[in-house]
Length: 466
Image (cartoon, rainbow, N blue to C red):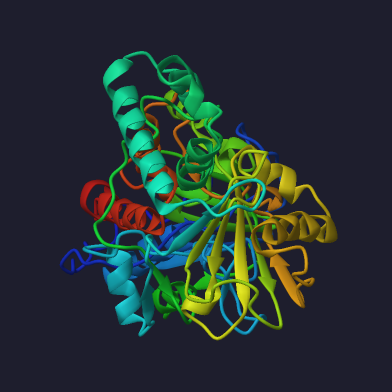
């Protein structure tokens, strides 16, 4: 195969101290997991490292390696940076199409990035909420907290009872079947557990659904937009946009060739940060095929989904000082959680969420149908006289060919090692990064960022032989 620089030729990099640098996932690519088809190699560009994907993981890896004096080219399939960090400002306040919160800011490296980017934050208040029954009746806080305590006890019982994996819904049915039918407990299972994982409880691993780690502190919102972080990380990087990677040829000790349309990029190493959904869809051909153990891990893990809709009104038709509104909808996951923008902006916006199995159903709707569906939930809570919104924005991550979902989760049958196995180098040439490569922090921006740094560290400290 065509080769990049000889690994033994360049002088060893002047190693800077290991520092926190950049990146989540974001790219994707096109077809299968076997040998790549023959093609005309129109362009060949050489670098020490090719990073695939200008999301947080890719930006983190590239930024750190550039700081260590590596020549890095970053290939991005779309026309923007950020991946699943994507901010829309057309409503007057930032609508986060992708990541919306810094989860647990205390000690979280993304908090440090926000400060470095000069991005102000707003601390959310999880106790500022109102929950409504299916007919629109407000629930007492006593009942809500009692249901929360019931759910916490149930989670502890699941952890203590089972040593063989099964779907979380089955574990609950065996231990406390009424939790699946009690409207308030059922709402909490969806609004909390299904939102946290992006997956229906029928698909979640009972053994591993809540074993990941979290930083301390109340979640925060970046009031001027989450995209400040990828903009900060991307400074000074060589990023090639609309470079849709469809094949990677690699060989131990002989570098790699990355195919993006008619262009071929050659390098000593490749760090692929394509999202799990893209890898599972075999949208990138690897030659030779990835190791069987890695492919088995890819098959066991799954991509969750969350559908968002931002509804902007002329006036607020809800309590403006309440941060969150919950609705016990008849169909689990259907527009059951709303964030009130008035608590941190001047805009009369409600951000609605559909999660789990219903998210895919919502995303299959036409825009007007999805809006009407969400507005039915809003009117159940605040009255049938609430007018139509003046403007709407919505998301369809599962239909995006460069993401194919929101974030990864531990499906029934998967193990923590399946996440971590995806971070292992292949033939000392090919590495992977992204939130799906770290069980401890999967499904988060900080997980993606830390995974990018770790891939860069492995490349520099364990693989580079200069």
